[in-house]
Length: 158
Image 1 (cartoon, helix red, strand yellow):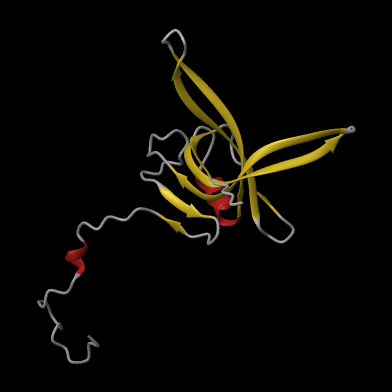
Image 2 (tube, rainbow, N blue to C red):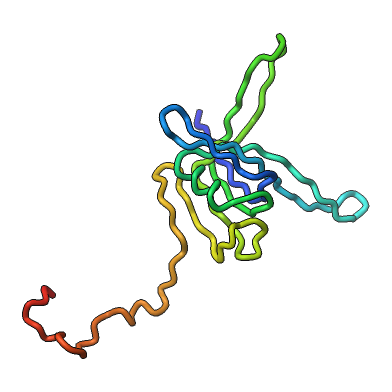
């Protein structure tokens, strides 16, 4: 039987991020997210339903989040569900959380704790690679035009 475990959430941080490190030097943090859903009830009135989700960030993703995000910041996380189980005073307990594999900071300069960033940025947990959207406008301006001093120099390798 096939299975699929993928979660995509967009919400706001419920608290400031506390970055910690494992003994091996890997960054890790537990963040809380509030995900809002707006629905009409049986009376036709709009009601907001908030779901609080715990998310674990690892490696470079955790470091970037702690550097740029604070309480209230809007983010998108993509990852997988993980069930944690433990026993306290003879009672079995469990908690469902998200292990983040990709995080994207949303919002702009007025994005509610987004660290003053003016655009979104994407961080992939598997590679630690961070990518900000790039504009292709104006890239043609950087090409050589054939004018200017030294353009016909025979020592230039192109």
